Image (cartoon, rainbow, N blue to C red; front, side):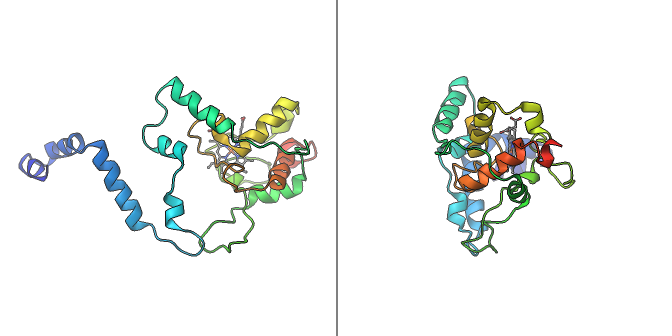
Length: 203
Ligand code: HEC
């Protein structure tokens, strides 16, 4: 391949390079690059960061290419959801706001017992007072006010936070319950942040 590139001039070579490198080769080179450049540090283990489950593998290779693919992911992810045993979904919105704000946990400088945050503001607007929010996800400001608090809406929201891929295959949103990032109580507190009429989200 190199010979072809060298002998065919720079511009043509770029096209050849794109056309001739097979997807498998690119994937292999990319994997090697990840493995050689990522190092374990503190509580973060490179092999754990690189380990993908079946859905993650599919999302970073072929992706979703058919209705069957989509249904398979949605069904498998929906099956992971655990609803609260006591049937109570709403905790304390003040605690929820702190969890939404916190990006702590699972970083190399965290301790094994650091309590994880949700870092929700990294992707969502939630309460109006916080101006530093990301926009990868939709605004959740006035979530409860707009959506109401029917049983369906409460259960959908719980399930979305528990495993976002149960509704959007290959979603960018972390699967907080499924991956054990947040506890049941933390998720209840976030639910209160979204649904409690007294929460700044709904003011
Ligand atoms: C890395 C970005 C990211 C983070 C962090 C994130 N989300 Fe999301 N979220 C999304 C995206 C993107 C969507 C849109 C649907 C999808 O792609 O899954 C979404 C959708 C949602 C929805 C559904 C909204 C609707 O209109 O039905 C809820 C509820 C939600 N997120 C809550 C949260 C909460 C609570 C947290 C923190 C615990 C959080 N998100 C953290 C990216 C994120």
